Length: 123
Image (tube, rainbow, N blue to C red; front, side, top):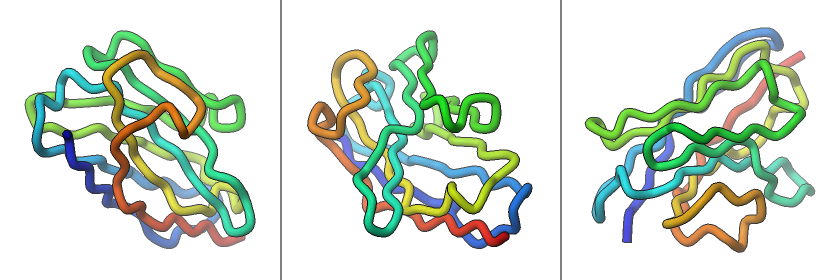
């Protein structure tokens, strides 16, 4: 099963930008649909964005629409989440996940998870 590792988190001011990376190893990375989720303190893990194996299908949660951009480079076994116009409410641990199938918004549908990367947005 594919193994995932997130990177790129950090501390930024409101209005700033970060680019998160999800690096995959094992399996055939290009065959996996990849999703980004986040979990803030005291909150449930929630769907942020997803991208199909070929990149032709993309989904975003309404809250980040127009601010976040998901993309993938299968030759590099990496999926990216470009986050612009960050808000304090975006503060959370961000996780990437993989599944063999279509994009799903519920966490139970995903099989492989990274360990997460912390994003903190100060206001």
